[in-house]
Length: 415
Picture: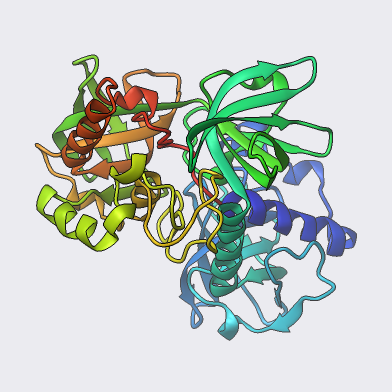
């Protein structure tokens, strides 16, 4: 959970190991406006990803999660420490040199930050290696896939703090009750946020029927209840439409909403996931290889591992017996939810006018502008396939705003 976990972890490192050196005076206090603008920059530190290393010039260029570029200047006296993701103190950190810092690494640079927030003369640079971060993220995703459940909130009991969700299992859609005890970590996507890591601590009262939910824990033997350790929810909006214009410079895509026939602007930021659904001819070959586990077979398959909600997710899958929907699985194919999450990622340049896309976003302030979490291009094939399957089952055609039906939850991702 990149931004949330790493920022928090590095800040804990600051408090634990470097508190003795923290000297905040009135002259170094960051204004409330600046803090709101970029929480990765404080009066005495910068947290972000290394974008450029200029060893000869004794500086690094770091990009914060909010997108600010800050030049970190280093000197002979600068101390470099490498810490593993997940560490809460510097007890196990090792001393390194500037030569050990790589592009893509996560760093916390300690030093007095000028009012313009453009530079920081670093006294200490704490580094989390890019490969170590990726390894931990993979482990976290695998854990959420192996011990996770995914569904739509259908009922809430505030008096007992119980959530009922509709989740897919081998038997189809199933109601599952999730008690929210004091030990459960409850988080929620903020409006216009796009990452799992953007989820903030939440109260039970904030939950709503219709929200998507992903939880980590253990499902009961009969599948009707789930003992959660962590619960993440969000109010998502899902639309489908035909692309009318693409502006790669601004990261904006214009579509006409299939449901309302109204024009919408889709804002595609760096952390959004863009995927392409196979064409009808490609689908024929894939379904042949997948056999009875192919989308549309046996009511949707419910077999094999699921992927995730960001680039690079879903490249390995959990062990047999568990899946993204929390349903028990048997051997060898994959259901449609799995397939959506395992589609290869594409670039913004691959989205063209005339493409049919499906977009998921959190519900933001402006209903005409959606900040995309996920975008699936080539969605006309998917919608046709869903329509045929639901017609065969005597159901109405899929409605993207309802999550595509059939228990497919196209919104909330994985760490």
